[in-house]
Length: 132
Image 1 (tube, one colour):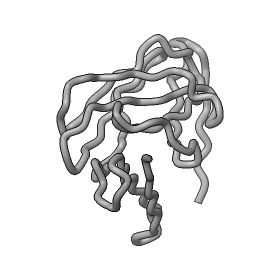
Image 2: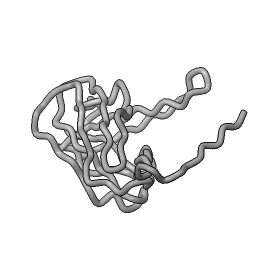
Image 3: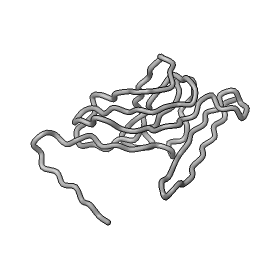
Image 4: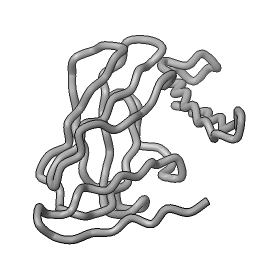
């Protein structure tokens, strides 16, 4: 039986979420996300996602157009602690939901998903609002 522990806490006003996956049924996590995930190099149709785990794991990213429909996934069978995956063939100017996990860990609650938005197509005007 697999058990999962999710810890959320606030440090200096920043919400931090740690995912511990316990695949052996006891309280010892098989991996913990200790850095990230963070996004790099967004384009109209792709984005780079990086994160670090406390122990070597085989990364998987679940993603989709809503937190309840993360029907796509990107899997790497290479075991490591520093993970970098590039999601491709995405829709321009579209919000996606995603979460990172380990290939040996079944999908868990989508309540811990993150979001990103791909860039609009080149030449299409877009605006950003800034508030205090």
